[in-house]
Image 1 (cartoon, rainbow, N blue to C red):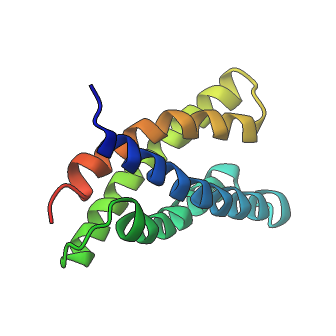
Image 2: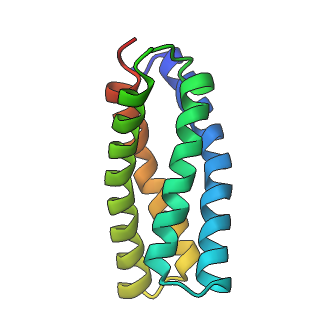
Length: 130
């Protein structure tokens, strides 16, 4: 059974993620639609921008973490986010290119799948040690 504390952290992680999603989609949209750069590069820049913002808010609020090794922790967070980015681009490619789903719908679908990976990894690795 999942503890109440884990559910509470998951809910806070998801709320932080909503803000990150707005940053991610906003940057992706501007770069893809206005600046006209490659959709996967635009997605990567948007995703990693959101990851940085998410680190700050996840550390402070969702996990209430006080680990003094901020740089090490951030590098772990970014590494996990890069794996998440690879998964995001893979799922977007599958949904968008193979199944012809709208790019942004494919991005939402991929985001929901990758959420499981990122929460689990950050819970057990990034924010597990004080």
